[in-house]
Amino acid sequence: MFSVTRSQFVRSLAAKRFGSTLAFVEANGSEISSASLSALNAAKQLGNPVVAVLLGSGSKSAASQLNKVEGLSKILVSEDSQFDHQLPEYIAPAISQLISNNDYSHFVTSATAVGKNVLPRVGALLDVQPVNDIIKVEDPTTFKRPIYAGNAIVTVKSNDAKILLSTRSTAFEAVPLTASESYPVEEFTPTLEKLPVEWVSENLVKSERPELTSAKIVVSGGRGLKSKENFDKYIFPLADALHAGVGATRAAVDAGYVDNSLQVGQTGKVVAPDLYIAVGISGAIQHLAGMKDSKTIVAINKDEEAPIFNVADLGLVGDLFEVVPELTEKVKA
Image (cartoon, rainbow, N blue to C red; front, side, top):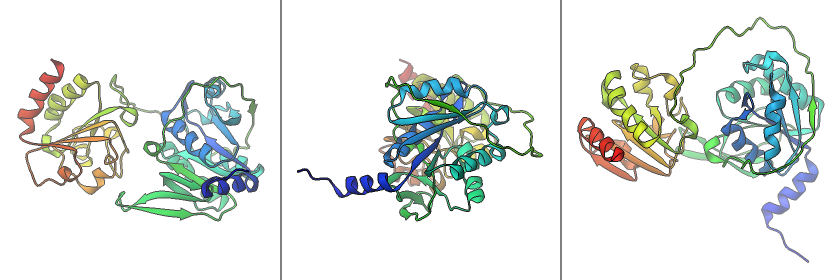
């Protein structure tokens, strides 16, 4: 005789009741995105067999990387070049066809820019309400997600036959790439209409610094830096000394200090590094929503009443134009 917890009992029943989980995996060439590895963790927690799907030229090469992930059942690929630039107008119909034509009870994607574009379109095509930006799987039908800029956590239960989810990557550990599996890889050919949408060009900001959402250390600057020249002069050297990623508030981005790809916050990227250094940042609620889950928060601000100090683990009241250069030199030393 053996006993199980309520959670284990619910999941065992769910595994019998539900079909499989379809997980959309983003890849750049053969490299799987860290956000998708986090989404795979959430997909596995649903308790169903997990089928990964990759789209675009080179998806077979990326599929080989998934053999390092435990717990999948198979991998679907389509190397149609129309998926190469991850246009949601083409991805969403392909995903909705897979969900409609198979016994998938769940669809999971990461809440990246791509996932946020794809998920609502899939929901519209299937007439299903997605559950966005989940941070915890309670059971296969019940999830937790933040609302009000992260100031409250709501528990959501979905009774839909097909449950569509996006996951906050900072809330789920990335699945380790340590396994040695050999999953079956199946090609599929979705029926795609020719749409009046085409890829024209892209202008990417390239940097040798760690990518913002996966960096272990992030140095962010705010409006207190007063100019783009000051941002470049004070934030980038400190980030380089710490081998850190660089972030910014919306105010700094809107003022033209840095590109909007570095924006952290409710309308930017959500990060949860081991160390987050906030320089000249007052701590608006919208910015806090994107970084308050960081393990250690250090704030540098001359205003001792700044809201950022309410969430900071370490706070330094002082002139950033004096403090940051000294800190940078000490780190280098």
